[in-house]
Structures are given as structure tokens and as C-alpha cells.
Image (cartoon, rainbow, N blue to C red; front, side, top):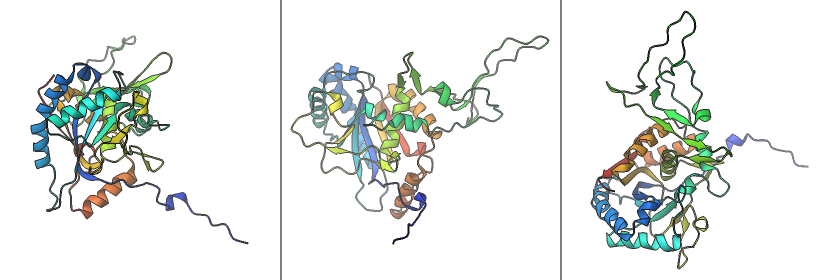
Length: 320
């Protein structure tokens, strides 16, 4: 007769590590209207991206003489709008990147930042939001989990009709929590709910999920969420739902996830990416995943910021 042995589940390592590059370099994040504009728009985009990509590669990391591991990626919006098909658009995208002398290692669908298979990725990240209460706040406003709005400071008070024998509260401006002399206050809409209950995640929130994926910090019950699927078929599918959320186009590519990210984007994305930082600053990331990155970066003698938001960088160019 054997005796039953009981162990706490926390004693077993559950969080699976992911391979890491030094830098994840995003070559674009375009919407269907960009593709609808035709090859010329893509050609213009990659022509403007290329010099900044070369500069980002040169300034990316100090690796102590070792070969820097740098992977490239491209995100296609198939969440807010569906246009054409992967079979038509992806070869066009890759051809224009190649024309500019660029290689797209990984291709991702933005809808994967919302749901991958049965994993509600966006909902899981939303559950990890921990709002930073501004000094002097009294919890009058409902939390972001109820309102779907997240701010980087104290909002202006809501005007209320004065009670009898009392004067109305004076207007006060909003105030950024970490302001330097003057505030740059931002209130970010995370999602919107339709009358039928369907939730649409906002572009900034999905972009924040995308950054967490590129930093290798997303897990579902300890398992990595964004796992690259190698593309081995001779062509791409006709339906977007048949294309994996993340595919590896270059079999010799360095790992998808990285210690740091850099995105080369048109300057119209600047407001969105400001909102991304507000979200990342108030998201409680999987602690074990953070520890794994810290241990591995220390082993490689690489400095990685403690703040997740500080691991993200951008190059914004003037474009359509």
C-alpha cells in the first residue's frame, strides 16, 4: 500500500519561460484603410520605415560583443475591420517590405490581442489592472473595471447641484499623478459595451496587450499565450480566422519576444501609444514571468528597466 503524498501546487514551477531576443522591432501596425489604399501606401510606409529601422538596430542593445538578437514583426488590424483576405494582402505586404530591403520575421493579427482560441487574452489583462489612486482621492468614481476608463491622475470633479444652504464645489482642473511642473492628463477608454452585451476593446488597450506579448510577459495558467506558428504552406488562407494569431515567416528568425521593444510607426499613432503607457503603468504583470526575464537579463549582463512601460520605445515618422 502506497501512501498519498501531498504537496502545495505553488511548490511546483508552473510558469513556462519563453525564448527572448534582445529587441522586438515592429515594422508597422497598419489598418485596413492603409491596405485599401493599394501597394503605393505600403511602399511609402516601408520606404519611410527603413532608415529608422537601421538606426534602431544600431542603437538597440549592448550585448558585450555577442551577436544581438533582433526579431521583426508586423501587426495587421483584423479586429476593427475585415478587408480582403490573407491570401491577397500578406503576399502584397511581404513583397513591399522586400522591395525596401526589410524582412518581416513574424506576422500577427490584432484580433489575437483580444482572444486566442479559447483564451480571453484582453479580458485576462483587464483583470490585472490596478489603478493608481491619485493623492487625496476618496474613491468617489467607480473603478476602471466598472467604467472602462483609466486615467493617469485625478479627474476634474463632476459638477453637482448644491444642497440647500451649501455652495457648489468649485471647478478644479485634472491633475497628472506624476506631473513635472505641469500636467499632461490622459483618460483612456479601455472598452465599450453594446446594448446586446458585446464588448469591443479599444485600440490603445489591444496595443498594450500587443506590447506585453512582445515582451514575453503574457501567460495563461502558466503557459505562453502568443506562440509563433511556423508558416510552411505554399500560400495563405482566404479567411482571417484561419490564419494563426502569430506566425513565423522567417524560419531563421530570432525569438519573437524580447527584453525590449521598439515600434516604428506613423505619427498619428502617438496618442494611442501615450495611452498604452498609461495602461502598462497600471497593469500588474505576471510576477513569475517578470522574475524569469530579470534572471535571464542578469545572466546576460543586460540592463532591463524595472518598469514594463520603460521597456517600450518608439520612432514616430511623419506619414499618412
